Length: 629
View 1: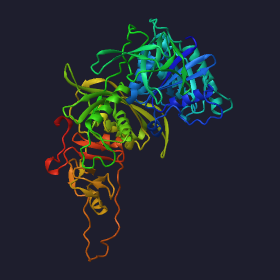
View 2 (view 1 turned 135 degrees about the vertical axis):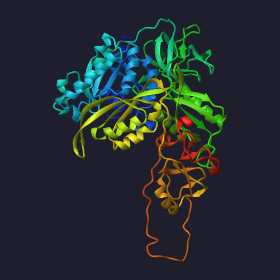
View 3 (view 1 turned 90 degrees about the vertical axis):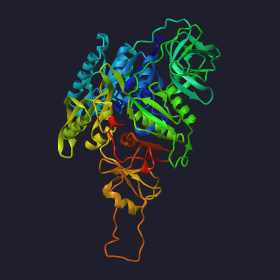
């Protein structure tokens, strides 16, 4: 156990976690010199590679001299905080990665707090020290001071606050503990490597402690799958040892949370070696191992050597703050593109997600065809929807709703701290946008300079306290207001008394009033009424949303009208007219845009929006606020 170190990498999204792990794997000799290894090798899911973010926590192991280092790469986006919370029990320390220009951001704070509460030792890694804003070293020193202030603010012990610091450029694969060496390393006058970080991990992070039990005891923190042996339980071994063929027990719970015990024979044991798993005959305390033999492993179970072994406390994560309704597809075009999923199959798929992701909860509704999923944020829902869509399923989802609770003074709603990093020229517009959504400006700070079209400008950081309700649909508006140059992050900080009425969307919808195919002639005539979401030739049905109306109410329109052919021609009447523009509605944009009385219809090939009531003569065109629903 003295030669084992278990660590995780903590950082905000896009601060360089996965890139750093890439170079740790390379420089430890995990890959041969001739091996063709793609970048961000830990991001193995298609969605992770497409979006450039880590979604699921993953394990790897490297050998450095005599020490075996088990590494867990964790997500940086706040919506996937549940992945991080359940992984922290597998490790004894963490490398906190902070951008040398941006400093500690909300997700850094959230995960660091969880790690400090567990008593973990932390190594601070200031990454991207080669950024132009940091070349004089002043900003880097400010970021180190901000990190220290964050440790104190989160109640770190004296020992935890006395953290070692390493300055790195993960993209180039070097680091140093001496800030004076950074200019030479950036200029390539001196060759660097990640050896200082390896040495700090071995020196700073304690080896795993021995459990109190004599028999085998392992908490299942992750689930895997093998085509040869089936379901795999991944976790850190707290005590004892386990061998292939031995009788073991799964100490879990059933659907009603009643404790259950299942005996099974261990068919295979694995350990991580680099990114892959290697067969072993025996697993011992302190290591991160993989056990096969039961098809019923769930996250939070205890794998034990005897029936009398003590159960470990099940993994607890912060409660969800949003809910979304998933429904069977009842639209006229259902079953054309994919499998028209029955309610039983939809329910089974959502329950399977809940078993794999402890941050997601499932609830039945009063309707047999609709189910409520509780989660952390819009991105988490978007990833789940996209995964189900790629599996070939068809279904519908409603607008995300915040989870309201009853407090002593009445209704309470979730409150978030939103941190915005943007050029100063956009500050007034952004502040107005957030204040309209009941946001309160808590701090205004200059964090560097920004080179824009009109010359060098200050880059500022704004912090707002704003209800979660106010953030729904805000990300796209914020990026538009800052011309794509703004950074946006948020973290749930608690609950606040209900803030009152808040209209989610200012504009109404343009709704097709009949079935048919959109014609260019009809869409050009509707162009002045609003912004179109569909192109000519797209098939529509009554009740389908085809655009955004200029005014606040909804409008039923005919997008299928054809030009009447006559033999009369007038000069200039047939000149070419083009559509002003069509907005491509991605899944995330649809989730941000829809209202309470609308559905998103999701199929493997198409994403459409529709009204819940399709018939125009059965629904009102007058829109209402949340409080009136």
